[in-house]
Amino acid sequence: MSIVNTSPIVLLGGWGMPQRVLNPLAEVLTLLGYSVNCYSLSGLDNDFNDSWDWQTLQSYLALLLPDQPCTLIGWSFGGALASGLAAKYPQRVSQLITLASNPCFVARADWPGMDPEVFGMFLEGIEEDFSATFQRFLRLNCLGSDQLRALLRGLSAQAKGRPDKHEVYIRSLRLLGDSDARSFLQQVSCSALHIFAKRDSLVPCRVSSHVQDRFPHHQVETLDGCHLIFWDKPEYVASLIHTFLNSQQS
Image (cartoon, helix red, strand yellow):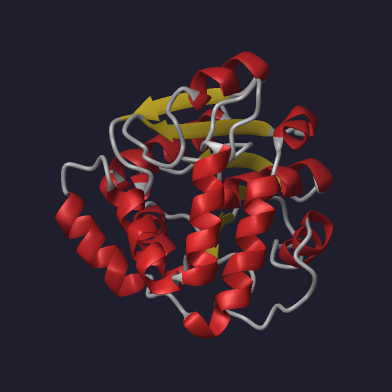
């Protein structure tokens, strides 16, 4: 595959996941010839200890963006944060791509998502029984894949929960529960691609139709697989990204 769009790529991870979880997608994109940098959400791979609110976190993440316009890719919660960055810094984000990302992770009256009661139980589990709850969360990331056992084994090795960062998990999870990135997506002026997984156990696939209806100028794709879609189908996800980026230069 030849590259027409040579803008650097920045990958943002999801809640509770270290930077290395992004490596499978970064490696495929690098083989295609792209320049890729990966970042976890603040607090796990670094010493970010500031207040966990949208403005502060986005200001911090903006420091990670290159000086030249980049393609910003966010997985799961990282997709909501990437949407906010694309809206706030249009001169620094030339393309926005989200992977298995719900603008409202917790369901609203007019938007599908995780049931609020289920989210409340998840938050309580993280607060009171972190290790067991985090392991169940890892399994939900992989549930729906035809290679569930292999993915879960690999993810469990790469994303070991860190009890020493317990407060980071709780504060960032609360932020995720309150998140609503729909207004950010409305403000995004660059081209955008949203990729959803049909067998996602954390983000209902029907979110894809809501995104398409609310933001008809954005491109939406759905494919078979689990929430950890770029592990489940790395080459396919990379090909969708590659085709989308090259189409922006045609």
